[in-house]
Length: 338
Length: 176
Length: 107
Image (tube, rainbow over all chains, first blue to last red; front, top):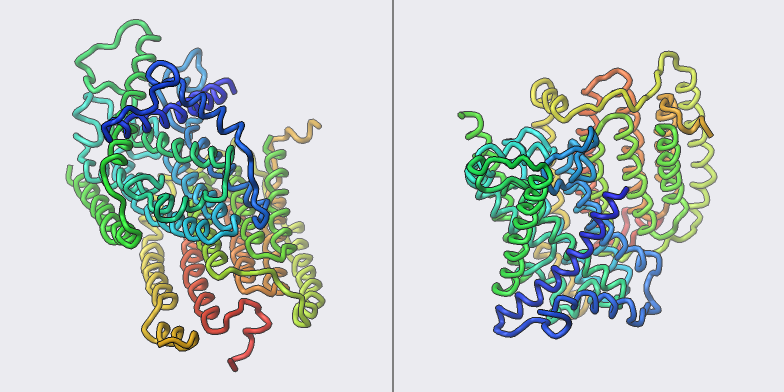
């Protein structure tokens, strides 16, 4: 139970500071400072933003369908936080025979649990748009859910290559299988999964409704899409759900393609005798890789223009899905002839 | 613990199924059905079928029900009405179904040799499933994939717009 | 209270639950007046049957029972796709989803 509380608190803090990272980084890309007044280098900005969200007036329009209107942000944020439960942050250290310390639930089908929770997260958006009883919300929700469902296919298919190499859905086993020689055996390099990695990257950007696939929530196109009619804390919950999804996607990418908590130097640096130092080092590598992934996310958002909706659906169905299937066939042939 | 979990999630299943019948707006029925499916996934997990439980969530609750929700939202389905036909169906349908349920329940309760389920009975791993599906049951697997392909083609052909549709729509609104 | 911490559940309870779900699905199919809700009752029936397949697969340790459930899920997905396409086509032709108004061939 303590583990769950710690991970939830760390996750929420990470979400808040990812918002800050994005604002500062996008600011720098656009040749301006990001938030820099509150605290040193703007580091207290998320706390002030959180307080602002709590104190804003909570407006519920009259014509909304109340039960679903109130349920939708809960569903979105809940699903975003649940999937962090199967992610291992560090090496499988167990103190006196306990289950692994750095993972909340060591499930044999861990990867599928993350996919399942992502599928349920679509409902948060669809129900939010429908219950808001407004044209813009409904259109935005329909577009967004259709986009998410389409790219879920490419997402799932691109991960099959990794699962075939590892022979298991268990996230811990997938990472251990990449740990033999440091950077050379990570799935993206030695495991020949670079095509799968790029497909996964693009499908993940579309799944989390982020640039360049963020038409459903683009302010200039649809006045905010599915969260038009939401204010203060419920809007903040949608916001947090989006960033929590980003972090989860980053975690899954590091676990599956970049070797999780293993160091890139592999056996060149022998493990030290201090068990706590090793455990801390594994968490450090994991956090560093997830941070690099988030950096890439924000970098892409600041740089690329957005897709038009029909270009987006075209790309997902006619390019990514066949490429993912091609990747599965190629990986299985390569594995069979090794 | 097993009994407690079973009672809680079987209760959710029954509540969801009865709610599906009692609600008049289709979106409420759809959400109750999602509750039924997720609780059934937990029941499959209690019976040791871990891959099936997660497949139930991904396929049924995460894809099929999303499709239902889309159609309800697109067609803007509204609350049901009480007509002559519905009252007749209530008076005939309910008793006949109670009769069917009574027959099935009698058969189940009089069967000898049904065991008990324990959590310690072990979980069927995905490897065992895949061994059987790709050796003994390969033909049904391939036929199912062809079936899904046919279903996709049929659905796109039926639900897509065609030339005649567009002309007919513009005639209805009176424009050229 | 101790009875709730028992580790055993008789399999006949799972089968009874499956029978109840199936019959609730039949009731829904007969009494509901909206086309989409009727279709959802069919999905409820399929789910009830899936539960009894998994129960028997557990009793006889037969993996084929679980694979059959897998096939039922796939067929239900295909059927849902085609059925919803038909419902959309019917809606385009009749502009209503009430079962009592779609039951004649005459427009």
